[in-house]
Length: 199
Length: 353
Image (cartoon, rainbow over all chains, first blue to last red; front, side, top):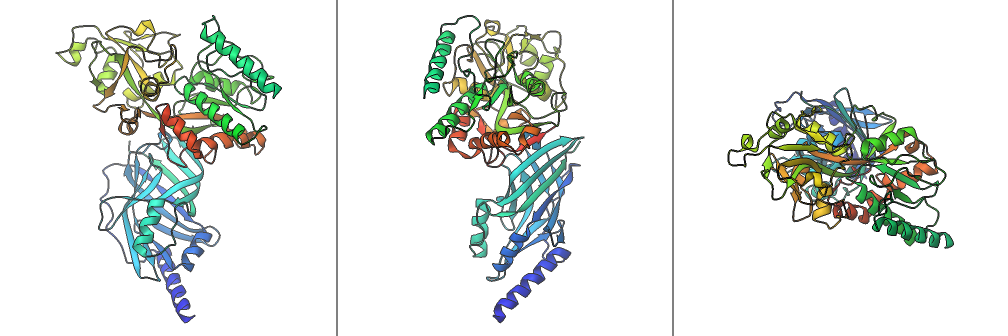
């Protein structure tokens, strides 16, 4: 029982660190792209997902320059800044480069996985990240549910009512963190991207 | 059952009249008059054959499940006799020839006449692309160019060369390559309102609609993606062509009558081959360029969001959780007609202008 309390306390501490952006586990971000593309990808983690991951000892920490915020109703909202890319959302092709990174920790096993070089691959409809120490991107999250794309005044937007763990990402994380928590198609929350390509 | 027999007889009669080439006959794959509650589409030519196949498969799926009440899916070809009565109880309308005409039909009618338009492009700042329409993603296609197989055109042209040809600043093959024949290039375009034409002219001009030069010939009745037209049987002709439709015609055995490539063969742009010959469909590399395009079914936003039985029927067919996007037969049909299925959850997503 006391062990469970300790784990929960550690989880809470990690969440607080995540919210305040003070994880101290910063990973070198991708080199800034030469384009002047702007925008953001906002991932809202649902309270249901947060509760489930806490119960399983899983903590997800956004790394700089991602910007986390917490709301008791909507959950944790993390904003990843657009750093480049030539994606075309309405045409379903190209990539959108995102700043920041993601650190996954299994508090029960002490294992972790860190991803940098985040992208939204429009053609593959996936958010991918490159594991630290690796070179190949791993598909992490897939927009799902009711997805709407629009383009107005040069700004492209995508809103998806659901955001799901990609099967490849689930397999990678389960293996790396030595857990069985992650499942392909597992709902994380929702996604909103706005993207203004370089002009 | 009696209704089914009547429908079969009617269908057979229509097929026969079409097959024997009676003037003004319906297109081969035209539906008989669908019920008022059925989901009925009109519009673009590039995806017409694919929608016919999806209609057949979807309706067979319902029948196979013993479902006799759900609205069926029907799609009117872009080419055929006109006017048409799209569904039971509707007024006759001129048969929409192409994506833009399909969109206008959607705008000018209600679901009592037309439910969706086949539009092989993304929404743009065009008058028809009102935010009152939802572009529901179906598949990936691309537009390249085609020329007579035994003609003078090279295997590849760059975007800049195509732009120059269609602006008439390059008019002889020798200006492309001194080893090519000394002959005048004859750039052609399908009718205004063709999605193939619009996408090609916009893409070769890097995102802005190119105004064709005086040397470019368009014919108001030249259907897109039909290389069988004698007008194109010329060593120096080139014209834009849907890559997916071409793959369906040439690699997948879906050529039918005039809906065939004829002597035309599709060519590369910027050194990227448009076809993946092993898969018999649009190549991923080519679809990943600006020449790639999305094949959409456009529905009225109000219909889609109504929350009634009609909205449920539309989403049951076209939505992210609908039959086309979730049943393996949907993706199989898309691939079998030369197009690239969209990733899970991208298929069925909605775009607006």
